[in-house]
Image 1 (cartoon, helix red, strand yellow):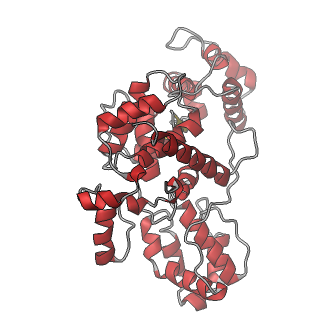
Image 2 (image 1 turned 120 degrees about the horizontal axis):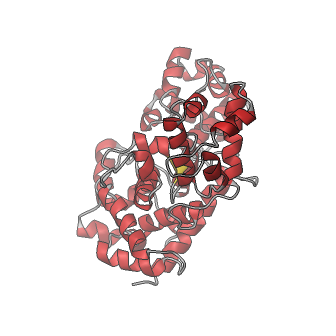
Image 3 (image 1 turned 135 degrees about the vertical axis):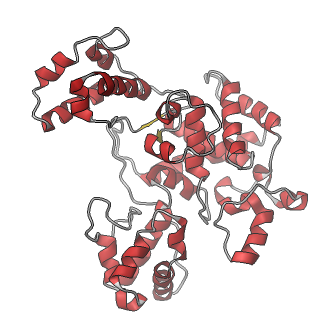
Length: 386
């Protein structure tokens, strides 16, 4: 069996890839699933399309015994892939399941330890910025909420991010103190079985196949919504990566973080300036140039570009267009020449993971490798379930 982490995104659609490569010289655009029988036969078994009904049955048998409603999980995973134009294959199914296992051990609304303390810390921090005494906040939150329990009681008994999000929505909508503290910003930013960003889901809701009962935010905290948006986060962008490993890194660090980290490594090699390989090509907190941009400025004459042209190129760092810019190609040409060999176009970003929910010393590379290991184990087991 070919190791699943060696399957590139382009290979999933081999027949269309071959035509696209001839016409465009690249295979980074999302393409329709392969339909040609001869092309399908050339794919590794793990990447060949399966009948949805058969795949659902196999997912049910694959999932751990303790997972409730296995049929519901299977239906949501297959629906997410098929409605996004992705092949229903062992590899794609296992990529989704691996992230869901890593992020929440197949729980639609996972319990977060000490979430009540995290919530109170957030509330008190916001109050301190506004010079509101803690006892005033506690008094305001002692009144009953729409559920009949006081806000303070609900916060003290918090177990999941969905519950926390609902409490903050109630506080923002019902309490003058809540709106003063948080405005319209709910501090719960991720949730669901794949821990998807609410902002990401809201920006990528086009094509969502289910009726939205209240809001996209609420859908993220459901199993079906979390899986659908998690699948979009893994596969919803064109990237010519050699390994799915880098998509798992991007799932954690943001689209194109692995490509951009490789670019930063190339810039560092050519300029001689050390850079954090975090995938951020421009600053998002200021209009001033960051370290990566300043390093590129130092080789501006070698890439034959003005500072303004460099900035405009770097601003494309969150899109597929950046890999088509003169800056990208000229920097890598210099790096390849200096090293005497082709430099990698994707590397794992060197990002330390920070969150109130994280208590260990973890990195994006650790996350990506863990998910990749789970995906490979899933593919191996799926091969035995027919």
